[in-house]
Image 1 (tube, one colour):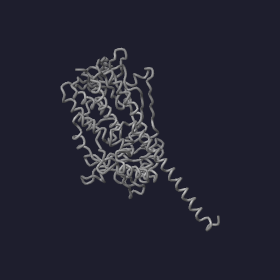
Image 2: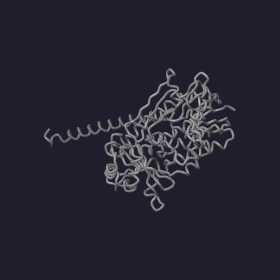
Image 3: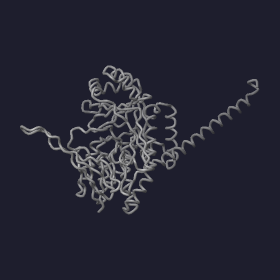
Length: 462
């Protein structure tokens, strides 16, 4: 059987291990961290994940969908909180019953690692850092990072531990799933005609928690809570343990100006999110902002995604995106599914399959990156505008009238597997139709007004 080597045991790396274990391939996974199943705290981004149809389809292909969905909390709508802290509006995500699922990142990752390890042909090597790719030999360069004890024996000084030697790993297929700051992608930067764009947005984020109240959810659980405030926003997603993960997104300048000390951050939350402030509590807010600095948000685009006939960039290594469409994980999971489908299509001809995969996936990755940027404007501001609400109502009406032709943008992204680049193309066509309808309506209104003036010309002295 062929051998696949995977860089990274995060969400995309672990799911890929499940896919190739199912195919019967020999699977080797190298992960820089210790096994997260043995760790009390896991460093890194922990913004709750919103599982939608693309991610569900990938999990279903490896037999994990039902279990994972049961571990999450369904969300059927956005609940938009107004600044008064008392009133709100509800915006359903789609048709009745359509929903996304709030999932805990760590638990999902642990489940997929455990699932993959059930296969005897899968091996995980934790505390192994992927350093680069050897172009000429088409090998992955890896180094073990576990160190011997630094504790000195009696009468001896502690010695400096020696570094482990680098390992050059051969494989029929190498999958770089090592995240937004991918070492594999970085080592490819000198390759001619490899396009790469990295952008940090001006906003950062800080994560907080709302605890259970009398062992129940502190407020409604089956919605995506949203506090849009123009240039910043607060969100809250429910967890199975009755808590909420709360995240504030704001420009770094806003954090520095209004959240740099305890009294300022209290005043800021009381003014902008009074209902959330009460639920979070003074002590928790003060403790969080004294310990945690705002974390950055990066967007990465690159092309191609395949190299040397045996290497593929996947997940955040290929298309890190800001989290505002909830598609980072879903897109990464769909990567795994599309690669598996493409290999089957080409009879496991690896070189041909990964070239086809890259050609197909790059336009989709770029499209969802752009949509994620757009959706932040929606979440922090547009949801409160009448023009947005009217368009949403119009799209819902048209979808009911033409269910197989007219899809709202959010529904195409979230509740279908229409390729992302096709989603953008369809939306552009819909926008053109709406624009023509508005022009026609305006023209008819002007003609009607002119006729009315003409009919009444005598009465009004014309």
